[in-house]
Image (cartoon, rainbow, N blue to C red; front, side, top):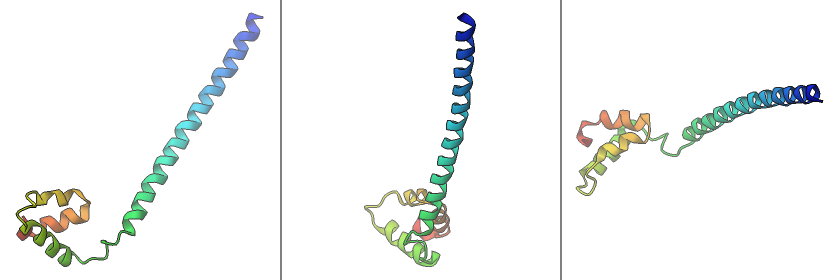
Amino acid sequence: LLKEQENRLRDVNEDLDRLQGLVAKRLADRKAVLEQMEVNRSLLAPIRPVPAEVLGMIFFEYASDPANRFPHILALVCRRWRDVLYGTPAAW
């Protein structure tokens, strides 16, 4: 009886190990899909086709308003905005 239970426990543990590996793989797959979705969403953003020069003018206007005391917050939106903002000295 004890031997049967040990065998059963071994089988259950093997199943659990296999399932944990499968769960880990599926979680990694899910993360990769979510990351790709975010990339694709950013490609569809309406601000994306705006030329850097126009974006720089928008940032300058934003920074010119005394109510906007922290224009550097714009640099946190995305890499492109950061590059444009820091490439527009008049905005800061």
